[in-house]
Length: 176
Length: 142
View: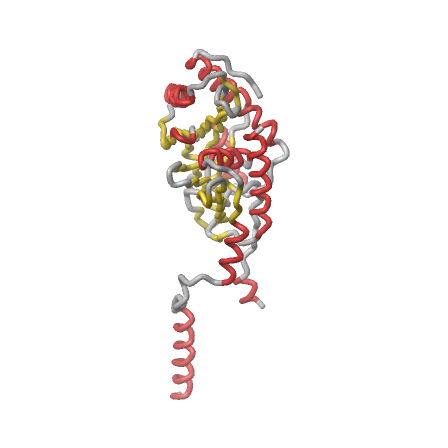
């Protein structure tokens, strides 16, 4: 019984289900540009991301796809304070792992909004992956390197990106 | 005394045998019935003439589903994407999509999903993916 219990893995079916707020997210992440020049849109997007400190990791012109990233420290004072409080409250037993490094990345996809290709939509998604440092719980050592991912939901970030992009291509960015 | 020792030896041999790594069978690369079934869930043919249109639709769906597109190769029709399986942020779902022309005017799309290191073999996730893709294709065409 125990042996068979150890062998069964919990089957978690990944949901390929559209999140309920997918239309809202799509609207926040997408802008329309009245242009035929998709290459210009893409290279301007790359330039804007470069201005923001990103480096381009992948680009596919035929599909209008671009992925860029930057790595930064994820250390915050708040975390250090919580770590110290937890350490004191647990009489030195719990040393919480804190976020050390983060990778902030963006994917850009430009695609034609109509069959004639006179309007193009640009969709950008920002996300970050955070790596935790090590810690200790009682006598157990917690290894470093635990990851977590967050998609950036703050609409202001997306507005900023599109404001810069629209300036770079001298075109107005329309919302969906 | 000798008997105890013999029993101990046998027990030790048994324990060691349990430690041996399982050997792969001779049919490790042979297709099984299960694989054929899974492939049928993972594959669907669409009435799309251009590979680019199909690939752009796949990119759109992956973005809608919250995936991060990692790599794309247009001439080969390959797209790789991944996401952390919310709400458990430590689990990763990775997908590879291949887009291939079957006949003139028809394109075959195949999706392979992996949850951590386990291939997804259930039909439901794939059905949901293709349902979302159909919706996206409608949007792209209109």
